[in-house]
Length: 477
Image (cartoon, rainbow, N blue to C red; front, side, top):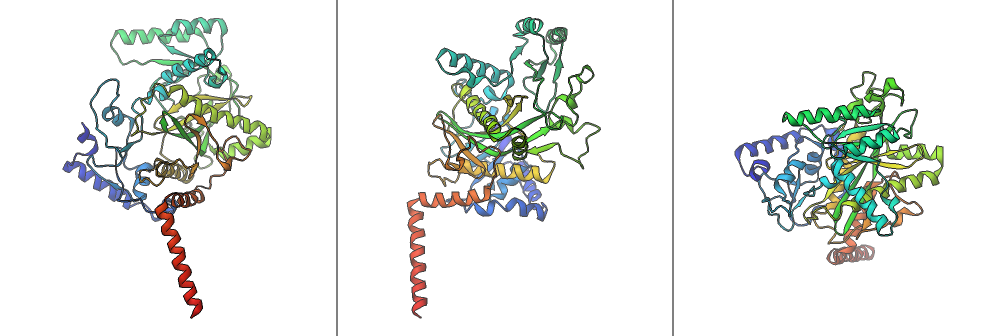
């Protein structure tokens, strides 16, 4: 099984590896110059060349791995493996099941936790967050810390409960399949009979042994915060290096994804996905969408500045602090159920929406956030994000077991289970949406690594002394 994915030394796989390498080598010169900007600030890896394996060639992640000077291998001798979640499920075993998989060496790292679905599958995330909310109330803690997902029912198991609540309270509900992405299978329900019809159809599919899936029904946020009359959500990136103890970094950059049509709750627009669904894959299909005019995205920084001009810094800072709190507490909610394999880490794509009162709501968490790009700005964001992620994972052991406060665009926000803040935060509650001077940050990080290594510090000191001696001799001459 492993050989079938990583190559196992087979001739066909070696050919595909070489073909992928040639593809990267043929990339345009202008793109290569932009991609190499951050690499020039990294310094050479410690010791030997880093070896990597991957299941995602012809992609931005593959370009980043190659741009760092790492070497692709087609066997199991890799130090780092960038995998899709299917490969993880097959090759990194669940400890509780006793399943056989890769026996990872001490130094090897992979980019997903084995049972990440506890956070990234919609039904399991809702179950874990609701359990944490109840636990907080029971233990005398503030349950509001976990009140960040819309009211959610898991169907069909909680169908009767959901229908009773629907009939008593009304409202609009959004139905989502638990395992799909990019807005596929989603629909809105404004009447209980729509849910009843869905449950009947699903029962028929199950009886006929057809392909069927569970859904979550969530209370629809019908009063979203709008910009120019349009709805949006925010894609934010966080890296969890460990669940026990919890260690989390938050990326400063991200983006807001807008609908192409103005928001409306009229009956005529209830079934219009271009009004209600912010997924970019859906919005691009709107006949009125013009890529020449807009890509329907703002950077998080642009959004924060816009909001600040309307509502003031205090209100907006509180809103963004709430987003950071959601990220930390969502990870806390699954920390007792995630298998904390020391070989694993994970970068999550958080989808967050704001209501009209500037309260943030967690919509979902993605284990494999899209790394494709439609524009150069999108490409540069994701290239820098991935490059900083690989620096953060520290395969080369630059950090010598220490935890830097900042790595490129990433800021440490939780260490040993407690929220933390670096000196750069100043009076700000979070660095999300602030200026991302990642290249300067990487230069400072290199100096920090040098100071932390006595051998390097001694070598640097000796070099300065030698330079001083040479300067004295020149002056004497």
